[in-house]
Image 1: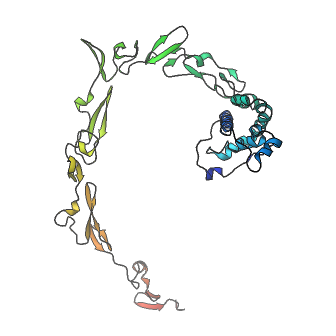
Image 2 (image 1 turned 90 degrees about the vertical axis):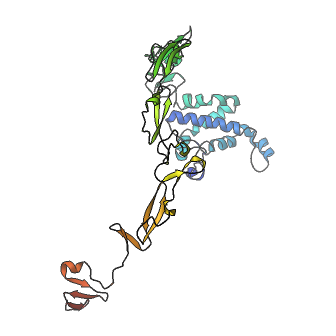
Image 3 (image 1 turned 45 degrees about the horizontal axis):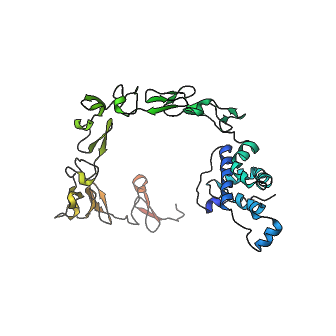
Length: 373
């Protein structure tokens, strides 16, 4: 037996490359594919340390040695996020990996390409063959060969129900959804292709002229060499808020997109696209609306003597200087209370303690430690 190293703190040391999630079938497939990848990466390697030629002569070829298998298995969980879970799963199936290496791979190294099926379907029974599903690996319905997939295909789970691809419908996904797709079929297969986005269902081909009716946001045209559905430009009717948004026409619809914060009306999303500048901005270099620094204006824009102006994007604030705080919309000096001043206690009880720890009751003072109290 060769030991399997469990590196409990590997995920705290090395960066995560793969999220190790899914059921046992998914984990088994990841393990099998990682093992095959390790075989390819280690091809041509030799025994490490000491006299490698002596080791080859006495221990056999490194290519099929237990040392190589140990090195490969030890690296299977090196690139996953949930390293501990990976090692726990790997430890549970280690004997299958060892048995496959010693009995199958040693005898025929080409068998590595069938390792996923051998490990996950035959040995561990975590998965089913393709087009089989469920605990007993029952056969999937034929939808997998048409326009759908079998729920649980290749796993020991799922219902086996057909899950139709986009545009396909029916119990076996063997028909097209004619509300959005058109059907083309030859002797061997069915193909459902999406109608042109301008069509309102029941189309006969992929182009606008193949429509039976035009969808919302489109209008029908049949004039000269033009035939089909033409996009309606909803922006002509100015559906957006012109002071804060601009209208962008899209196929069959439109979008109202916000102007840059410096704009009062715009034709695009940047400060260059402003029709006029918003309050607090003015035209600058390159016809761009730039912030006005109100604090640089002539005169003191803040009225109070203890106020200082601070510029903000598109505006400004009048803050109090250090040592002042705002009260009744004015900056007033912060005054620290005297140590000997009476506390609010005096208002309610007539008692207070001065800075010398003397208790005052009314107009009489008592030493705080006096036995008279």
